[in-house]
Length: 232
Length: 232
DNA sequence: TCGACTTTGTGCATTACTTCACAAAGGCAC
DNA sequence: GTGCCTTTGTGAAGTAATGCACAAAGTCGA
Ligand SMILES: NC(=O)c1ccc[n+]([C@@H]2O[C@H](COP(=O)([O-])OP(=O)(O)OC[C@H]3O[C@@H](n4cnc5c(N)ncnc54)[C@H](O)[C@@H]3O)[C@@H](O)[C@H]2O)c1
Ligand SMILES: NC(=O)c1ccc[n+]([C@@H]2O[C@H](COP(=O)([O-])OP(=O)(O)OC[C@H]3O[C@@H](n4cnc5c(N)ncnc54)[C@H](O)[C@@H]3O)[C@@H](O)[C@H]2O)c1
Image 1 (cartoon, rainbow over the protein chains, first blue to last red):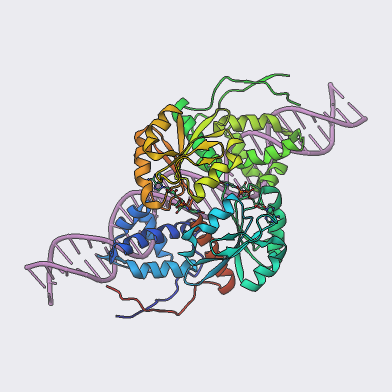
Image 2: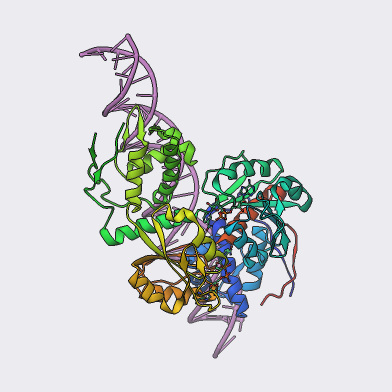
């Protein structure tokens, strides 16, 4: 049986919170597909994805009515629909700027390629690093950033340079027409409207953990402590 | 002038959204402190942190009244208060389990130590990796996980193993009394109540970027495409 | 064919977060 | 002192996200 994709009900956009969870559902669905599960209920999928089942159903309802009442969702079909919604049915060329500790780890990471993200360029400013072979690519000098972006159709750039270099790299990348940036440098990037920046800051995650950990131990921050600094 | 810390007004907890932004403010404040700025208005700090100034003021108001009307906030004093709130005035021992590409990058990252997070242990299951010297530490075998946690007072564990190993590592870590985990493996970890897990999934970030990128280019997912898969 | 059973999709109440807008606080110039 | 000017801290209104609870849809066994 061949089924056509139904109408696109998404008159007005999908909520951000939903978009952020779709990859999670996709991951859970891929796990089920590997175990040859044909259909899954919202309840089971919700458990696998670590969310509430009502939330999952509401999220999926934003994409269309892809479930069957009394049965659940067809795993393969839902994988296809979510992938299409996220734009993973096409291939995205990604460039990584800053090939240090983190940039190398990212370049070697298989989890990108398996999702349709192809690392199309590795760029660094350090002549020592330029020329290194990493994950089947040769590191190029970041002077050629603009031409790499243009020639290889790069549409997403990952910035993994030290913080002081990030804004300058960001500006050049945007001038080259890229409007999607994943930033690992611990700085707030200033970008024009229409450019999406997502940031990952690992030390922020640890700080949030520390906050909660402190509460568990003490019931709160150290109290009655003295402030010994000079104030104005 | 020496000032005592005022009363703790935090009768009921600080909103999660606020906690997640405090590290951001801290980073912006440290930037100002380096440039020897003494006081800052909520407006200026908000710009530096990339948020709305009303939000910033409300966030800070959850910690107490640390500003001065007509003047702004004392940079050093606010750094101290936020640090204390986040628990950064104490030293946290962190262990990294899984010393592969990512684990190494994390171990070498200076941004943790500078925030009071001390890497106290590196553990891996691969005998090839055990014994390596990284960032002044020797990689130990993950068989000794429990004893490393106990003896070095580890309270936060970073999991950077492949996905299939993550849940088992997580279980052992929790059994050792750790209740704060930062997980890089792309799996949903099942943990008992009282344990905090934060997860970082880089491929999710890319997928979110791809979603928005697709909208910019096409105005939405590829339409009218045919579904060629078998359905139930 | 039918009826019992399962599970979706969603209206609605609730909770969480954001943003506006302004009164009150406090500094500072004179 | 006094009054002006800046900026905080926060009610209140607005917006977004969550989770409940159930009618409607569809399956499947008999
Ligand atoms: N390593 C981690 O685990 C980690 C964790 C969190 C955040 N970060 C952040 O990620 C970034 C990279 O971290 P890292 O540990 O890989 O640092 P790193 O110093 O190992 O690597 C940075 C690389 O960027 C290159 N570079 C510098 N200026 C450049 C420019 N203008 N154009 C292109 N390349 C340039 C350097 O030559 C170097 O190879 C930093 O901002 C760091 O704060 C890293
Ligand atoms: N490298 C990246 O940029 C990146 C990005 C996103 C997510 N991740 C995830 O982070 C994790 C690590 O990635 P990586 O690239 O460093 O992988 P890797 O294969 O380079 O390293 C994994 C390490 O974990 C060790 N290990 C395996 N089982 C273990 C166990 N039971 N106990 C202790 N150690 C064990 C292995 O010996 C290896 O050294 C993976 O789950 C990956 O999906 C990595």
